[in-house]
Image (cartoon, rainbow, N blue to C red; front, side, top):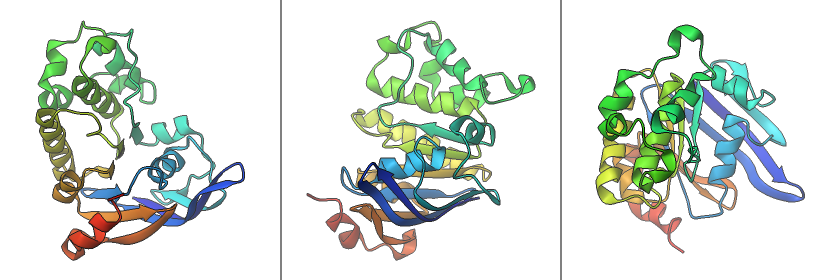
Length: 231
């Protein structure tokens, strides 16, 4: 469904990605692991269109999209949950969720029941402002907002960062359920190894802007992966 093919990305004279390739398939979770500053978020921004690539191709459902605008990628089924959540603090939970209507047609401008099944706390807080929620609740809201767009590719950038353990478990269960539906590809960026290991079908480990290890979960050598996660 998604194929990233040998992409480079620069910020001015600084090169953030070097020849990175990656595949994400429906019904699978692809985990991208690595320390801070190795290019994981740059890769996600390239995929969703927030930063252009200097070389290489990004292919989505058979079409090259590396020059496609972010809002057009959203209309084509790519949803992004950024690091730091970026919910609207002054809007209510309901209004935050409804911002996900933007890329879908009028007939789909409803909040799917699955959002509240996965994150029941959101149903209880529809009238509360986003900024009044805890960090974990805001993360659930950010994922829920992405799901409102009916994505076929869900990009999650460190969803466990700064989140209490009970909500990490809820997010893990939600990702597993979405994967098991079989029609969505999930791309998960993580530093929390155990969380990524338990969810991953395939993995890619990044270091200094490059993919240095990649493969299926069955072939993962935990010590090798951990060696690229420790400082």
